[in-house]
Image (cartoon, rainbow, N blue to C red; front, side):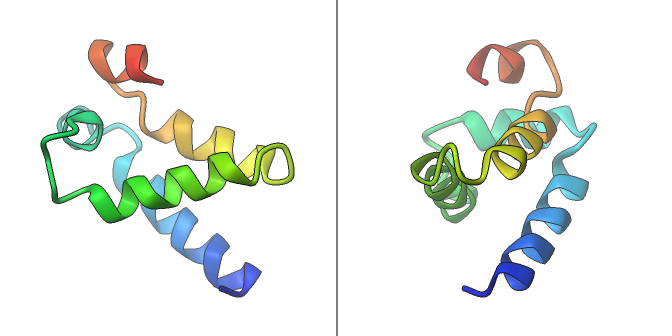
Length: 73
């Protein structure tokens, strides 16, 4: 995937999840199959650590709204 496409997708996902506790809870619920493909993106970013550190931290930051999601991060 081209870097600009990847960054655009990441921007969209961060905007969707930021401030939405219910979406963050659903993301971290491993039994929720809906967010499975998005979790794969997080695992890809983790695999590229430390080369995509800024993107990794930004995505994690958008996924920590609420007490339980914050613990998951």
